[in-house]
Length: 339
Image (cartoon, rainbow, N blue to C red; front, side):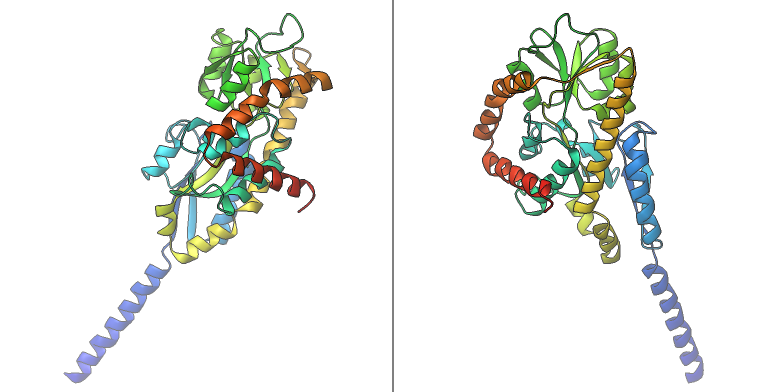
């Protein structure tokens, strides 16, 4: 009887060991929604390779299930989808979340940066050093970006060279951008990016103040013909999780995610955006049906002077805004200096 009991006990221990081994080997799967149409350049160039790398190094520990298209997540509901755990990771533009990340709106102020790569790294450092804590207390960004600067894109060439935006109805992505357009005499219109193509096509708006990065996914070259290169601010974006979901990850899965996120990933994302913007701009310059115009030094100085009060107003009305903007400019200068 004792021998039988010992045998059963040994068998039980073996079974427990096998179960423990199976539990230990269980892979964590997270749905990662890319928020845009299938085949979008940033998904193909950045998000899929990033997820593929994580899936390779995290085999048996962490797997990212990438979902493209807008059936599960789109540019306006991505934040709610993550908060409600419909997806666990998402990419989205913060400019579509008016008031949710007020300090991140510094990037929408005109003439703050030139390159997405530099601004994206500076944005990450703002977050990492705690200067955006009030906004990001419920989420954990995995990478962050400041898009390339928004320029003026019109369906038809203006009757005279642009002196201001007087009389033009222009789509903008956020309140801060709308203030700049209004200061320049234009009429800002709030229109989701997926609705911009028909808006331009049917004359609902005369143009848009958006980055060149919007051209490929939304086919804007088909409905625009005049482009004025004026740095009128840029939206921010991030790949992120909720803090609750991130904190619940197994340590091994969290380690893999951490090692493949952060400043390096943000730099890579900013570089990708700059490349995409340059390609769209060069394609327009090579197209005889398109006209790309660069402002003179006098025009640039004039528009900067006209829009300067917008930045001052943002600082005044945003608690802690001056510290955020000053820190961003400091980080930007350091990054440009190679630090």
